[in-house]
Length: 225
Image 1 (cartoon, rainbow, N blue to C red):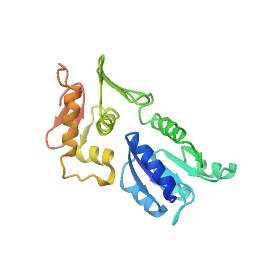
Image 2 (cartoon, one colour):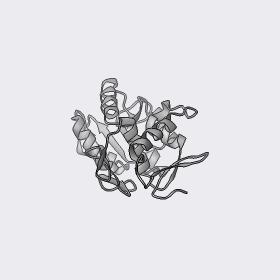
Image 3 (cartoon, rainbow, N blue to C red):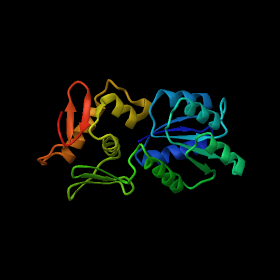
Image 4 (cartoon, rainbow, N blue to C red):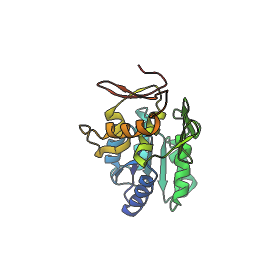
């Protein structure tokens, strides 16, 4: 899953980025409000984490601009301000959740998981197609009764495909969502990781779930196009 973090405190940003990357997220980090808005407008994110007090634009101003543009990406506000008025202002501007600094990383992760369970994303912790199942809370993948061991990037690619079942996903969509803005869409990294997934998920199975859409990308489905 792909997250945008807009935070001007270098230490906090580094702490959050490292923790999210260790949990398999792709994350873009910016320290300026105007830059944060530009990133949010330029790419599709699963969640945006906004600090309230930022240079150029506040987190609440960014949030209001996004909601005016009908951007419904879940937004978690971070702030050192714990007054009721500040919380109400953020929620009224369209925030989905609010976390006061300092916070424990497990609490941040729990709040992010809760946001990811909300529509239009999968409501439950379990993502499934045919006999392929992923528990996003425990980070366990099974094909039938067989446990599938995946690397963090393999897991992220599969999770993205499971959240968009039966849809044709381009290599660029997959690459930018899993590898963030450092992804180079002329490389074959997506093909390589889909190949890894095929060997671990489809090899030896009568029902193939990962299908190539020639010239476009890939599709996770019980039926080929």
